[in-house]
Length: 608
Ligand SMILES: [Zn+2]
Image (cartoon, rainbow, N blue to C red; front, side):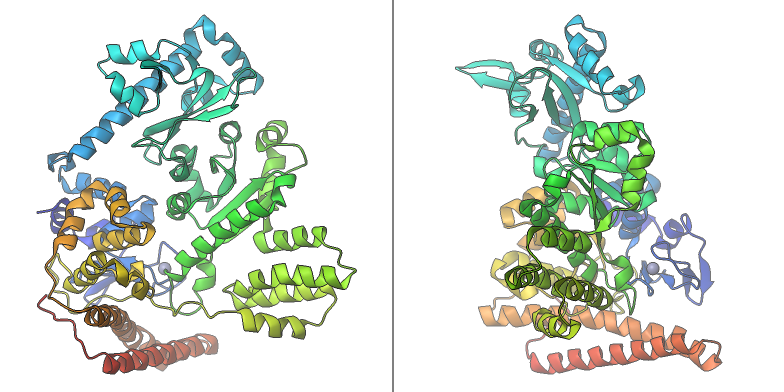
């Protein structure tokens, strides 16, 4: 039995959720105020028979693993660990893969290197200039220890680590040693060392700052088995709690910016290791918050490349948002919020915070929404008194505004742009309407009534995944498929990783260890022979069925929860109207899926 099956067998979703919230009995099920959105009456339900949970207010839902992921803000494997501990299932008992063990050893080596550099910084005469530098930056002893700052003396690391029993080959693989003409040497020399940790606190690599005129000023570990610059956020291990608490992550660029911020109590600050956030970094952050504030140098803040990078981040978060749709009205609450904090000219965050931590807080509070910032930037670059300038500004801004998913926001910024250009709103509205693409069909998902309570498998989800994994050409056809279509968190995790990976190789590297077996089973699963057309139809059919699952439960919920409230007559007219609209919407979509069903002749076989 796999670890996850074992955990699910031993733990009851009701107990797990109950340890976080106060659950009330509601018929066969339980309810509570949703921990994931603000509400006055409970729309968060736990279903013991299906061993699942769902909030009808904000649309989130899943099994016990996804509950812990969301509540604790941790990733799948971390949630699994927490639950394994609770269930008394020893994760160590599972067969460690060779890859697993190798990675653990690499972390150990990095940890030992970090400790070595740290000791040198604290004790050795050679580190005097580094100690002076640290003092000059105003970093206190506790901070130096918290971030385990260090100094690389230029030689001694190799000797130290080989004495501990690590092989030169391993140190080379981690980029701790370099090699020239067959001889190895300490890679980092005379630099202030910043161990870079992942969200779990494991040392994945190092950042190193030159203390003299050596170039480059900053040097990072090279790409290794455990280090990929594009997939880490400096400080995330120490910032994750504060980010969740304050519902905001502040993104800066430098290591010392992060460290100084933390020392002064701004603990929700992380560094992006480059200007633009990557998809991988966003994936880490979106487990914690959807609100990001970028602290930017005013010169960089207007930079086209910077803006593009940030725009990518916004879209990526927004896309996630579409995947977490609730019923009506909840979407705008979940919407990604990207703000820009222009810093005083010539000052980096480090300087601002050191001078006046309150000034920093003010900048955070007054950060401009991305769109306002973009409008300001464009307006400052073109001559708005001339027709060419006006059309240039309109060309650059209109598509961005048209893309905003929220209608109120779209109208607001169109009005703002119209005012700026001195044209009538109507002209821009028409243009924008042509540009606006309706958001991807809103699809979320539902509890499956087909599922036997005790079943640890979901045949429909697994068949769907097996099809896509074994036939990469189907990827395009899976556009409508969303993480929330997968009830089982293991299937959901395979799906989201698959979506982020560009090919099978990458997928098998990205998938967490605990799911490697599951992934292999899906890839190796025997599927009935079928031609290309049939496969496409089969997938379309799966997606439709997953969608039907969702709709059926929504309908059930409306009938059992909302309709009685309406008949009792104790709701205000606004709530009644919202419920009526909900009913119309669900009905319409039901009809649509039925039509789709009539159009697809191929049928998924339940006995798969
Ligand atoms: Zn909710």
